[in-house]
Image (cartoon, rainbow, N blue to C red; front, side):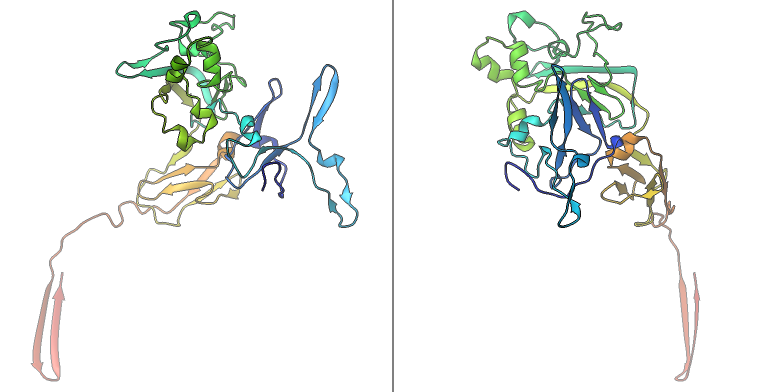
Length: 327
């Protein structure tokens, strides 16, 4: 692979493997891509009454007459095998989406979300200790445009997270979407520190979260102080408890929609505690029932018992010996 393109064999994703919002034009996969996997897209859009196309569609590309196979498709690259911040596709990554690990659906009832700042020696606060005068004392939820409406969708902040399905929340995928691309980086700079001194910005803005890989960004503890806190109810989870323990290894079978799943790829098992955790987010978000069958060895090998034995041997002669044992 090089910086400008990737050449690979690919398949077309089915609609239940991703979420697409045509109004604001973003795409979110239901499953996490592996480091060696590539994602490309072709699409059309309309601007000022004129239709534009990015990439090529399979039906528009004919067969190679010399080999009898379809010619190479050219697509817009969204994810490559390299995730270096210096690559152009780094800017296409949505860094404003956070998962709640509540797959299978989040209920709106009793849902609460707050964005907090952990002030050194001051605890968690709903607001930033220092900002531009125009937003001084405003909750972070409001500054980051997650509170612009009241419960009747009137343009009046009410201190509560704006539940707008498909825009601020993806309930089936269990994800929160910030209306700004870098909520704790450049957008926080623009929204809360416009015109302020550089020293003040460097004290609060987490630029490294967006221009570095995760391992490097986590080393900047002085600005890694933002916390999301709340409560949510989900209609399903990623972990299945089997109500038993000490399950024999290799005795668990997991299937979804009649198809056997692979241990280690689609799910992992805690054999001692008796739980199955589904890793394949596409299965969880699709709502397909998951069946688990297993052997129940509850208690086997974990019970300790004491016993007493007696052994008697009598040697009558060199050719005859008698013995007796009891427990």
